[in-house]
Image 1 (cartoon, rainbow, N blue to C red):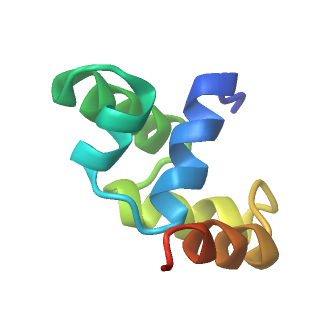
Image 2: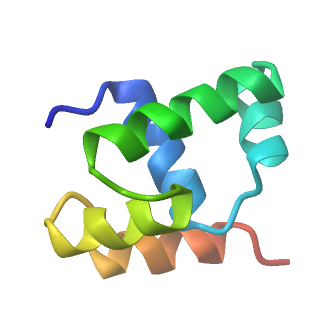
Length: 77
């Protein structure tokens, strides 16, 4: 299961708590494209949805808990 660089970026943003629309806005793509990236990530990780994909990614070592926390902290004021 190899994620593309873009899929890794989407996964990190998702792990940080970004909504699908937030991801689309930051990446300058449509909402449909952001959803497609998340669908592909979920399929590659055999996950049920984006949230489950983050859990699987942490469990499989693709994301560390440190990365998840750091991603979430970026969104704080």
